[in-house]
Image (cartoon, rainbow over all chains, first blue to last red):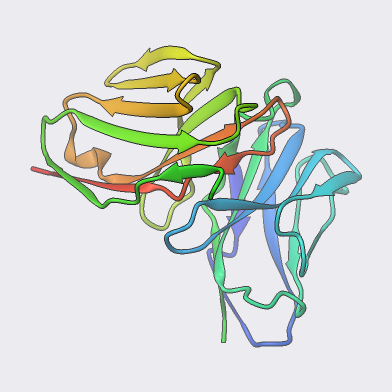
Length: 113
Length: 111
């Protein structure tokens, strides 16, 4: 089955620790994205990558880092510098000729204790 | 003022009703408009994808864009309990992938 997988589904972290969220896609999509969703708010773009080995900051990149070493994978690291990391994190992907037509993974719920 | 405004609801309707979900926006450069459906604790699912003004129909769903009024709508005909979810509008100025999302409207369809 083609799709986007995110792991883990739930993640708990102590304050001061870095944590990495996984995102893998087998849709052969060129671009990948990370969003954050908070209760009562829409999705906000953290980082995006349109091609391997290249990525750009979104609207709320502070306290996060990414890498794009393979087309299929776009891991997100939530660093200890992120002041309010508890949220629902969503990964998405799209084809290059239709960047706006994005397909989402199931999400990872991160809770900082 | 937010770039995209969406009434959070919740909106509760009886089964079989016609549902109208709406978003307004302020950026006249937006040309691409999407509607997503998100079930509780799941990732959003793309429902409708439209470019510029006009209508697009897909089964029980119709997306409408009025760029002159900066207003988009999603109509759901013959609503079903399985339509109960949060509906998110999203939009962008060009084929960049940098989308702006509304906060979502929670819909409940009662049997």
